[in-house]
Image 1 (cartoon, one colour):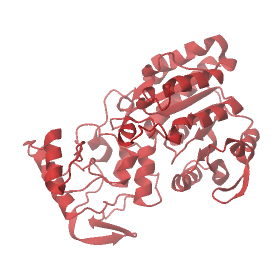
Image 2 (spheres, one colour):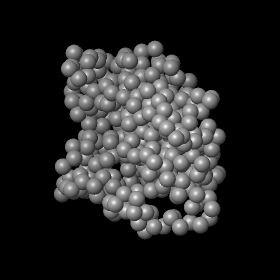
Image 3 (cartoon, rainbow, N blue to C red):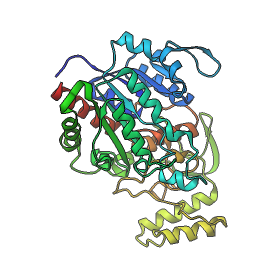
Image 4 (cartoon, rainbow, N blue to C red):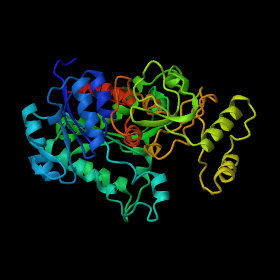
Length: 411
């Protein structure tokens, strides 16, 4: 094992799920993290400083628009929105270069759900081409390897006249990086790596052809076939494994406020950070009781999609093409924790019929495998969104270990 840490930068870092897993492995030094939204940056800085003990966390977290690539490299001064920074060139030069780039552009433009919701099928969405900024950073700093995370829908997205994946592949190739020949084989089921949530993502691992030469293709194949699969778990984690031990939050007759947050559920005596039930209407509380008791009793009248759609129409007077309600099952992984969770939690109903509520921020974080010592700061809306957008740190750590193994094996 090398004693020198692997130097990495994280692009489109969000609140740092990918970075947190890489840090947990103990093998990496986060030189910089780039993210443009305020709330994730605040949490990222705090996490780097308090947990990972970077004294200069404020300098390493670059809140900036990655599309302004030249300024991102050279630095910017007194920007009305983004303040000032010395830029990536200086940070990376001070560190003596970098070894690995990690990150993944926002996935909404590639997600099939996003394409269905958008009247132009996301063809006009600027996020289709944010990967170009990732490539520019890759070309400038020439790391040995990279990890690029996105949704499987990326394989079928076609915003212009060509599939986006063909453009992505050609761009990485011309930047000097070798990828897996068949990227469908790069779709990873996170439940196989201890994440208690049905989440599949495309994880593109690439290595520098300049650094590894003729071995580049062999290395990439080895990563997917042998190295990463070593970190699979023997038994999948369930909702109960993830959140079964958290304090119970019961419905109240009247609203209360706790730390400025309005809720209609009890507050646990032993204060668990971020574990406050979001406010629920009488109607929704009644629906949650009905649906959870239906499952607990074994009647299962409302477990089919058609029954759930009918219930939604009966309760709201509206019609929906998709079923709006879903109760988590104790003995299975949860359904996908999405960024959309910030709008409502109706598809993430807590399985305990006595609690009659949707998931708290802490429960969403647990299902995404964030540690309890990651204490999130911001509005509920901001927190659900950043947690849903994150790469689960548990998988990220497996990925980090596998990249370290590869670099040790072939360097």
